[in-house]
Image (cartoon, rainbow, N blue to C red; front, side, top):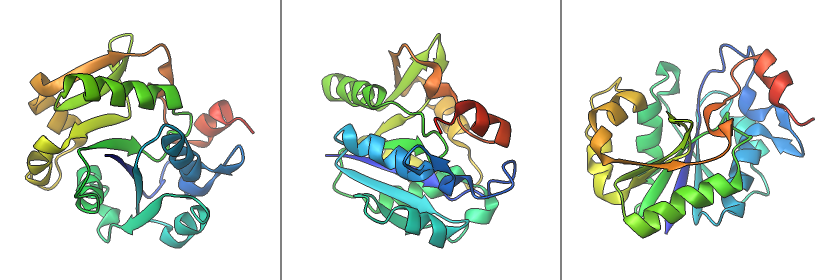
Length: 193
């Protein structure tokens, strides 16, 4: 069973409003991310909320994803949010680390990352476009203890740098894995609506 932990707890400070709930096609941005994961046959989707929690939860009504709250969201610690999400999927064999502000994520990329893990059983699988790592990133259950053990303030980038030898890269043909939506300019450039 593969789970996904969608990080949607951030303050959206560069956007100036809760970007997680901004419209993206038919859905809010975070809901679009979840729908893509569900379409890619991810077994369980957990959204880690924080800032604008109620509005994010409202945006998920009718979606198969569920949410969990990160009470320490204001510190911006992404690994803490990931840890909180991982604790809610104890029966999963692996979990995807997913950015809630990457609604252009493609179903085919998610499937490719999962398929590589299912074949190779790597500890970490990340998509790559022109030798640049993107998201979503899969973490096999066997290394979750290391995720839980990181000091507060450790970034996902720091963790991946320390454990670079664990990473298997899957080349994809889309730069969508590199792009997130941080500013209003990003939103206007990327949004389908």
